[in-house]
Image 1 (spheres, rainbow, N blue to C red):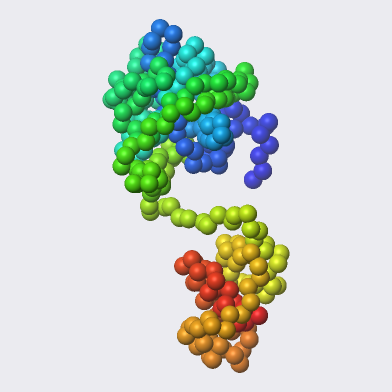
Image 2 (image 1 turned 135 degrees about the horizontal axis):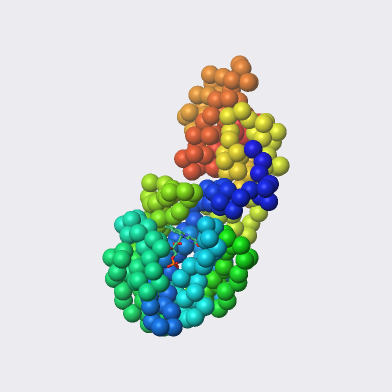
Length: 293
Ligand SMILES: Cc1cc2nc3c(=O)[nH]c(=O)nc-3n(C[C@H](O)[C@H](O)[C@H](O)COP(=O)(O)O)c2cc1C
């Protein structure tokens, strides 16, 4: 299927984009109007765009249905401050409830059962139940259009982060596995980010990886090694060479049993290398592969 966006209705554009640009973190935005009415609403058009200066952006869009604007947008235009509360799994149902279109003077902290605590540098209150809360100054509001579905970028500078002590260790480091973030996908879909679905990919640093194009042809064309496997192999900084001290019984067995049939031997070596890569051992995988090159 190929979609040309100009041929879609606003609702269709929203449907496809929101399912595909996912998961999106949720900005649970607490704002206030000039009269002091507090508002609390979730926005998943949200992300970090700069760390120095510390800038996050979220987007209360014009409603596709009737082109009206959200109270949150009206509030930040009146009082350019916001507290962005991070949503964790234990808050998800109450957070969703707060997204009902309650009248402007109705406080969603009350309707959704959250507790207000005063912020230190801005007027909107903090959601006590959230584990990370950011007090922000709104530095610019940029409308992206005038039709239903048009976003309004609320560009915020983060002034203060409040982080629950249970998330940090003695060295003030955050444990990513503990935050239990909730994120939005398409339609009614959400996901939770926790130990069961997190994994690490070592960052290539200033040293360059050799690149897939530098891998020997037999590795690049392997029917066994996947794109992820090749990505790991090609992330070494120099082409590895055979290490005579590499002593591996399984490798010895493969060489012993399959040396009469080079095709089978290559398959076995690549399968073993794959297992080693998937258990996080690219150096050993290289030694296994080099034994057959
Ligand atoms: C998880 C979640 C994410 C949402 N993300 C957005 C968003 O990014 N932009 C938007 O305009 N509305 C979004 N909504 C809908 C608003 O929260 C909803 O329109 C809300 O009523 C706006 O409240 P307000 O008029 O009090 O500001 C989202 C709703 C939920 C539940």
